Image 1 (cartoon, rainbow, N blue to C red):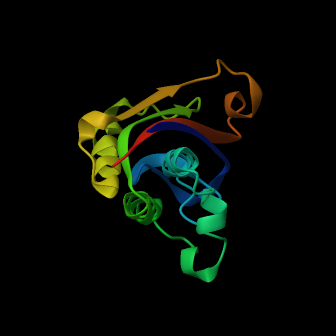
Image 2 (cartoon, helix red, strand yellow):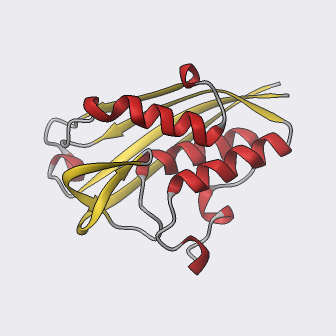
Length: 157
């Protein structure tokens, strides 16, 4: 059986925190506010995978508790991957798009893909991360925050 899931995450900018995307700290840019490290890429991917497997969402499995305060979202993805495998699912592929006016993510893309593939224990060829802008429109266009979307395909093992 094959199942598809989609995920979406958004956070506002917070200059007091580092910007972390797919486990990579991006220098010289405001971070994102949130309970964990506010990694929109990892959060969108986690929700896409959980949705595809019919296992709820990131908020239900990783609540805003002390255990997850400032936690690395790669740790969350590691747990999501383990949970999927224990429920009999294999990750076929993940595709994610970051939506922001800045920063440029091309120099960090390979490390981002490596981090996600390692956290999920899947070949890096199964992971895609892209970026786009909104040409100045909406909250991302005004530089108020950042969003990410993701889709995932899982198959029964």
